[in-house]
Image 1 (cartoon, rainbow, N blue to C red):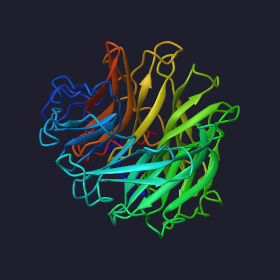
Image 2 (image 1 turned 180 degrees about the vertical axis):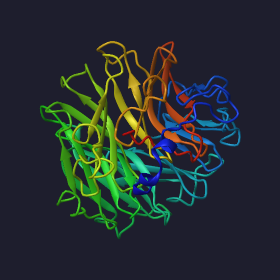
Image 3 (image 1 turned 90 degrees about the vertical axis):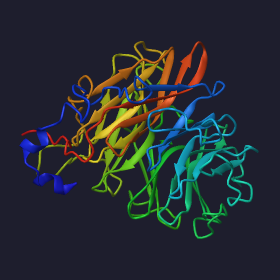
Image 4 (image 1 turned 90 degrees about the horizontal axis):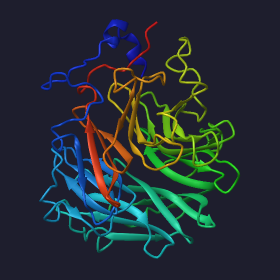
Length: 433
């Protein structure tokens, strides 16, 4: 984002603490116009939510153990399958095509590949996709699809893992489909690209140049595991300009376990990943992990500009502790001004349950944005046990998250909307000199 360097420091430091039409509201506050108090829960028969997508008209699609669509005010959309929800099917990832059709992905029904389903805008299966709305791709072993992105040309790219090591770890797997659900023979081998990493692929993003970046872990079956990034060229081959072989492995936990759950590209081409670092290598003491990589796959240690003393965190990484328990980031989104919103869960004690929704917002140098919540962090307790699994920025700058809340022992879809920066405000948070 070099153009931001020309903005005066005074202009950058002026952040609106009151948002239009809501005197006193501040970034990080729950938005009461959403569900009455900023929070919406939906009983899906015990189902949990894993991913969300926001349509251009402001409607919100959430997928997990089922599928639901919400109106901008948080109420279920009655146009979608009659009551706003489908309790069968579902998936781990969701994307919306330019024509409003919804694509979800999960592991194949037979257990040996990816399953991709496309729904029409009314919630019915789309028969123009694979003949009945569903396509399965056999990868020769148990597989889990985790994320899906739509190319500008309408092709569908699904990323996940082929689990060839005790059902826990294996190869990064990417499959590209034509708009009708047929495999794209111009990608990889018959539409499939496999990368042996002894790890798991957990998130993906398309770069502006059409290359695909997949993030996850490497070394899952070993003593510890590291963040892994793989970049594919448009034909599915590994991109040799990315860490020389297309694969970047980074130990961001100083020898402990670290995982990248999500990845996104900044306007300047750099890549940011969010996940968890566990200094003790067990289910205690986890912290939010945020790291930034340059376009060539190396950790970003220079920050905004090589001539400014503003590196990104410490050696390209930032960890955030919410209070001594186990904290884990599962998703990130970049605001129009460049701030990075990271979402997941936090607990008060050194065990994973009970958890609360947790958000953090970071400035361009990786420091927490003190104007957001309390010192850059927000914790929201909905019920007995709550976790965010995905986050997105609406057109007006609001922050929408989706995950689950456990109410009286039963899981429900849980959404929340928080105040962000007003649309198109500066607010990039370049540090003061």
